[in-house]
Amino acid sequence: MNKQFGWWFFTCGNQILVIPQGERIPYGDVEDLPLPDLDFSKVERFSHYQGEACLRLELAEPIDLGMGEWIELRASMAVLNSQLFDLVGKAQQFALFLKTHRFCGSCGEALERVDWELAMQCQQCGFRAYPRISPSIIVLISHGNKVLLANHRRHQKQEQPIYTAIAGFVEAGETLEHTVHREVREETGLRIKNLRYWKSQPWAFPHSLMAAYFAEYDEGEIQIDRRELADAQWFDVSQLPHLPPPGTIAREMIDHWSEQVTHN
Image (cartoon, rainbow, N blue to C red):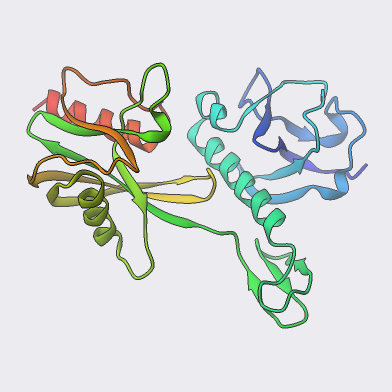
């Protein structure tokens, strides 16, 4: 067994092992953890947390590791702090990258792992591949004490439909600001003004980087794109619908806006 020390991210598809105590991610020397006989030759060091290595080991089955329980990656958002949840996302993106980049997209030869950065390289033609990152935007549009929230089609069948901000992916040749205006027009028919960048969040489902904006209503009537949305409405700050879970940047934006409106 290889002697390795750090934070252990045991993953299996869309699941991760969490423990009931501490930071909820197993920590320590692999020889001191109550683990069964595993193949530690496939351990990947992918980052650092609190000065110690973050180690990922992908398992074929969610077997009993003698500690903790397996939960879905998205569900780990509710039990991990934001930094560890981002590291879970990084581990997942890296796992997907290794799975989908085994061969060179230029000449077809097998790719080899680069040991000094997160990359795969072709020794035949020199092509190097990096983990895919898909830039996207999310925008919260306000109009006085009201905010525009939409029920996306993927959330339509839930018992309590989730209403959230408008979001979409950046297209080739676009700026982030252009994407915001285009997505708002396409999905709602509205025009916006006073666009303000706020912050960003990596979202590894599967490989997004979300740039968050606030904006104000300018003109137009709501005409939704029914291929994307099931509904979109203006909601008063005192009567908000069922919102995205805490930890998502959408919920953080809505809470921030609500506090600003309530205290002004």
